[in-house]
Image 1 (cartoon, rainbow, N blue to C red):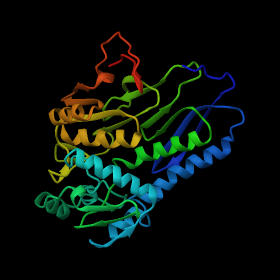
Image 2: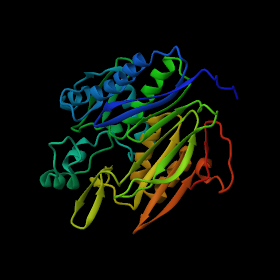
Image 3: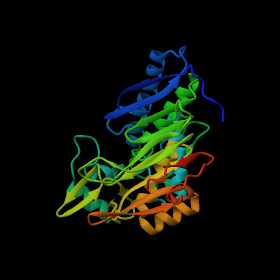
Image 4: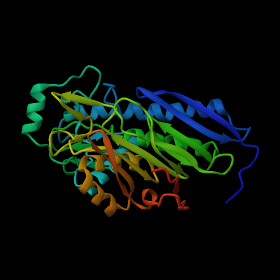
Length: 335
């Protein structure tokens, strides 16, 4: 391992975006133009927001949603990259991850601030199942264009923030920074190490409706982690509390006992999307798909007031009291 230069200085940068905040904790040489770096990081996340937000009527995503089926629409390269990866993970998960569930999201009141639970739309969603989006969305990547083959609305809330973190890391690397921990609304990506050459320690949040606290701690080095859960946004229907995560096969929120899923991957975009897919699939099918895809994942099942863990992959299977170096990331035995 290369020894970190003692000339590196610790800095913390942050800003508002997407209704939340982005953050960057980094060790950089004195020559780094921090003002320019902060501006570039803000521009990177704002670019994703302007292209992919469903809360901005003039975003590129909303322009595409308004297009008629069969009409080719030109899209910016960043949005095309997210759609291409989203479609690929949608296909690999047999539609568990689906970028075309905007109609369901809005019907259940999880869309823009002006939206509310729509009883008529809910009945329609429960009555008419949507086809998997990867079967009705055509992408022409070389020409940067896409078209729909049926009526549906894209919603990238399960992948766009992860992509934004990857874009932040691209910016950091362009500024010559080799040691950083970047975050956006709980999605995290690490590069290099801290000043003492140890890995970046980050908490995996406990899926508690009332309190925010750690379930355990992992160490990241050149890897990303994302979590999908039922404990930050939900809707109460009678005595039933339902997550914001949409299950296309049900025409509504997931209801399978999974409280949260954390996935560690090389890219934050992949970690984000796979966490959503496993959340939708539930304990048995989610674990099976994670094993098939070779993912490092931790599924947390809610059982009344207690939680049970379903670990997948070597990262989360490490024996208590042991510590194992891994090629991309390593774990603190806290689970």
